Amino acid sequence: MLSCLSKRKKKHGKKMDDIKELREVVRYAINHNLELKVKSVNVIPLQDEDGNGILHVEITIALTEKKLPSDIMYELVKSATNAIRGAGESRFPVILPHLADKQLLAARS
Image (cartoon, rainbow, N blue to C red; front, side):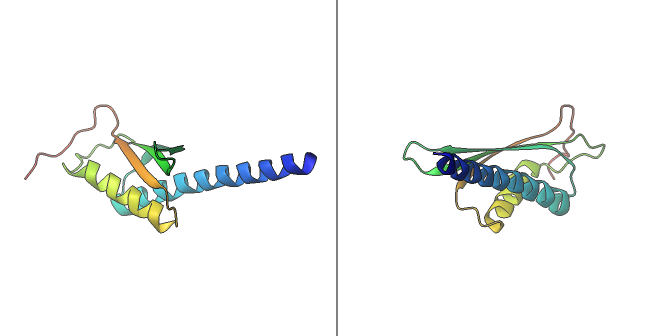
């Protein structure tokens, strides 16, 4: 019985490490590729109605003084998706980007 619990803890711990690693991969990609400071990244593993694994990923960007480009939401989703795929993750990512309150966006050109 005890060995069974140990295996569960190890498996659960591995999953938690994977989620922590995914958060860091997403944070790094956005910092590096988009030169934005990330306030938070939250990754929740879920299943869709067919039982397939998905990742619910919420990203919040810290307030910047500069106006962000009008396509920033697309760039956030693209950068996060590429980082998750690059990390070898096969679950489908559902990415919800958020900007800081009072963040200004540049006008479309």
